[in-house]
Amino acid sequence: MRNERNEPVGILGGIGPMATVYFMQRVLDLTDASRDQDHLDMLVWNHASIPDRTAYLLGDSDESPGPVMADDARQLERAGARFIAVPCNTAVAFQDEIASAVDIPVLSIVDETVAAAQAAVPGLTSVGILATDGTLRAETYHRTARAAGLTPVVPDDVVQKDVMSMIYDGVKAGMPVERDRFDAAVAHLRAKGAGAVMLACTELSILKTDLAVDEPDVVDSLDALAARTVTMAGGRLR
Amino acid sequence: MRNERNEPVGILGGIGPMATVYFMQRVLDLTDASRDQDHLDMLVWNHASIPDRTAYLLGDSDESPGPVMADDARQLERAGARFIAVPCNTAVAFQDEIASAVDIPVLSIVDETVAAAQAAVPGLTSVGILATDGTLRAETYHRTARAAGLTPVVPDDVVQKDVMSMIYDGVKAGMPVERDRFDAAVAHLRAKGAGAVMLACTELSILKTDLAVDEPDVVDSLDALAARTVTMAGGRLR
Image (tube, rainbow over all chains, first blue to last red; front, side, top):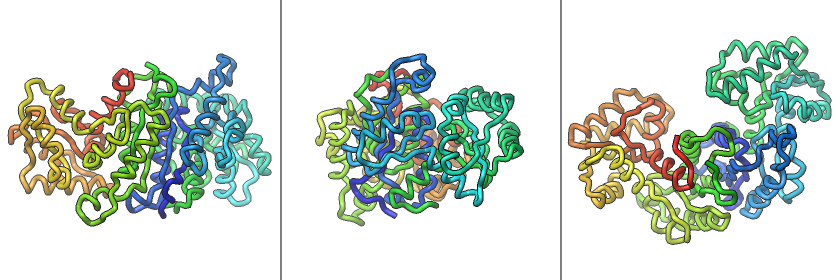
């Protein structure tokens, strides 16, 4: 496949900058390409200095990243982007603000992930969510799952504590995380009735790749967004 | 350090798309950052559909990538880039065409690499070049080395054949390359009098990182460009 000239995919990134680079790598990995020119043209705003979205959402800062991200989206649109992907699970809180700033589509990582879970497990009725405390508290994944007819399942407190530890003391700190801990969290959600488990946090996406986890009922949010980015741009998945 | 808002670094990429993502990762790795907002703002045109530069340079195509890259540079300048880095050793052939299209600086990967070699080995008089046949034939690294007062040293034919094999049958094909082969090529250039060895090919940069090569006289062109990108943007190196 070849992306049409002058109609790049827009990537609104920088939140965080490492997740954006990892997302770009996954778009390349998932594209069926045998030469450079088969890959998608991507226009990427890796905007690291966007005001801290977690600090704002927790009320520790009154500087909203929303208007900056809306501006970035407008800039990508002006530069010719045909649609926009935002590789971040926290930025979902600003999804409407970003989408209303432009006339081109803005993909939703949450919508894509829930759809990918339904595609992965036919007849799915309950879906587990592995994410930060903040994402769980915001309930974005809960709401989208319910709207799709799925019952959301979250970890018990003690398991959620270990999920946070895998994210913060493990991946974010550059420390190895043993496969057993990841598997235990997934098994816990399966035991609670989840027919599929969504990795709704960038660090968990990276951990899954590092651990070479390849289980059909474990659905990675960044991969779901990357796959949709490839197909929406007219590309073929590998 | 914090990049000043609205003055991102411009990355003219896509040649190839994987090298661009790897380069972005190295910029992140080399930046002394303790939080997302400490990283550089980067505006990246990962323009995979740029006409094949190697086919053009070898005379197999008459579609020059030069005008497309000049347009991309103008677009990055219009979007507010304060300077441009082009993470590719083949694109050097179009350096003047790109630089004359814009009023902002365009870093030269060759200049940065030769300067990094001189900084790495005080009193350097001869410098080795590990690169593709095409880069050696173009003599861009030779010329810049000579202009800096250095004698360029290239591998004998049999070793150069193995360098090409490491690049094409190894890294580009996704096959492992043993450390011994890499070390043998470096040792060969040292034996021929090279006081430092420049890795003047993206695949060799990736190989060096994969093999965890950490020798002060082995100078990586992509890392040299990444380091200069960080410092020119006002960042601190890790």
